[in-house]
Length: 337
Image (cartoon, rainbow, N blue to C red; front, side, top):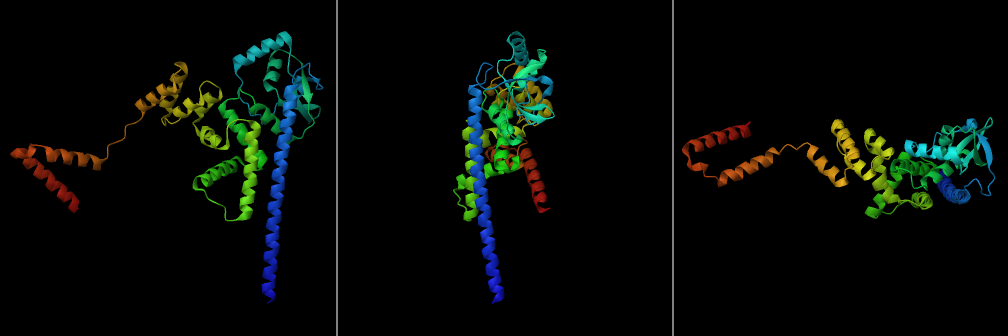
């Protein structure tokens, strides 16, 4: 009797512990959503006032004290555009201030404006106008991601990596776990499956609220279109990925070229696509031409020959009939083995 009571007591406290854990996760989910919305509001205010003449307090910060963010989603800077911006800065200076946060030892971590920062250095400037934001590291990263993701000139690879990074931060999990969550939702929608465990369902619902909040805030794509059309970009060969990242080719063309397994043929086709400015249709035509031909099925080949033999007049020729008889005997022997 005592053991039964102990077991019931254990079950009760175990259930209460699970409920408390779920409630804590749900609360954290709401907090993350509210935080991202708050950061986005702050971002919109900064964007609206992002000029040297604006009302936001600006400071002249030494270029030597600015540290570029290693988590920056933008990794490729077009040399021609950078040169044009450098020439403009030499003439009229930096017109939009950089966003930075205190980084210790008198340094500042760059949140937004790395291209302007690089161009200012190339132009020989020793200081640049900057807005100093008092935000923690996590908020600074999210602001940087949001600022980049809401720009129009981010290439598809950087955009995909940025969204995946932001989802990871918001869900507090790895990129692989984010992808698994997106795939699980797609599976549930397709099969119309319901969770049998109410606690698990509640956690999943709140996780999905965070996912939807991220895509709504960023304002690009939907979770499903991101899963289907963008995530595959991260699995394409490195040579195609690098060209795509540099903006030399559209992502639909890059995905098509990535299906060519032979590295030499793939690089050759990639070069042709860029130099000749091939359309997607032309690229697909050339892929069909370089695709290795599949070996015919022996079974299908035998069926074809058998049907032709039945309709043939070769049976009437004694010499050919004798050869056919010999071949049939060999087949009989092969089957017996």
